[in-house]
Amino acid sequence: RTRRFPPGADPLGSSSPAAMRPILLKGHERPLTFIKYNKEGDLLFTCAKDHHPTLWYSDDGERVGTYIGHNGAVWTCDVSEDSKTFVTGSADTTCKMWDTETGTCYFTHQFEQPVRAVALSQGDQHMVISSDPFMGVPAALHIVDVAANREEQTNEIKISMSGAEGRINRALWGPLNRTILTGGEDGIIRLWDVETGKIVHEANDHKKQIQHLSLSLDKTHFISASLDKTAKLFDSETLECLKTYAADRPVNAAILSPILDHIILGGGQDAMAVTTTHSKAGKFDSKIFYKIYEEEIGGIRGHFGPINALAWHPDGRSFTSGGEDGYVRIHHFDNDYFRIK
Image 1 (tube, rainbow, N blue to C red):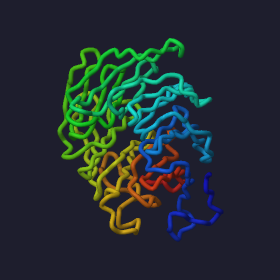
Image 2: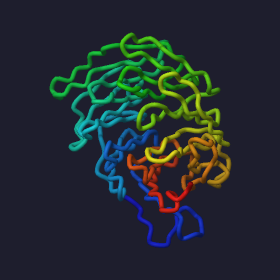
Image 3: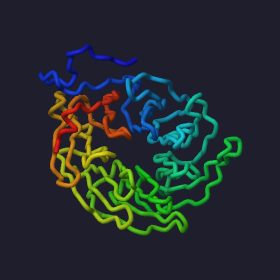
């Protein structure tokens, strides 16, 4: 069920009537792990540790349905450009492929290790799947073909790539599907050549685990979020670090605006370390920064635990955050936001 606030009510706790009112989505029992919009931005997919990825309408937060079939935490997801195919990676050692509309799972890629990151290539003909290190087997990236005809889908792995220390939290397709970008537990961002399976570049700018990677709309640059309390902007081809955004908390997610030179960071002290119940003390707000000047513009409060996931609507007029508290919040920007120079 979705909680809708009456006019004038302000769940953000500020006294000004003009504060942006988020739409609060309560559909998950456990902490959120990942949020994804489809290409048009009308559908919102959320993943959590409660085994059931959920689909919502992004404009009003109406819940469309859940995808039932996983037996473990669902770490990441992706959706095809036509929004018909939805893929999920889970700790139950599977990557599942779903029909978005009916919610039926039409294919399961079975692995020996927990699955972490999944991502569809541009054009939706290939998919990269990352598996966690487990029982002495190192973390690996696996590339599989996505069949246009679902009956012909196979689990044949085209190429497997390993060489990263610790688990790979995020994997993204680079420009023209020639490369794959990864970030994970060892704090190193890697650029992999898809043809050869070799590592082309490595960036050691982060000091701790990388939680999230997010590409710009044109794929020329991307932003990383790390537990070392920074987010950094990198060139997609050279992995040159272009900007650093310093936060006063571990950063779990960082996203780039598709229309303005803005970024949003989300995080907060680890749930294990939270001894105070005040939501200000744990720094659980989303921070908006200027992408170019590295300066903070403002913050958006609301979550009662660390923010684990962020996603920007493709039209740039709203964003969604998901927290350790199990809530998803859709924030539609007010006109004041677009007047920020």
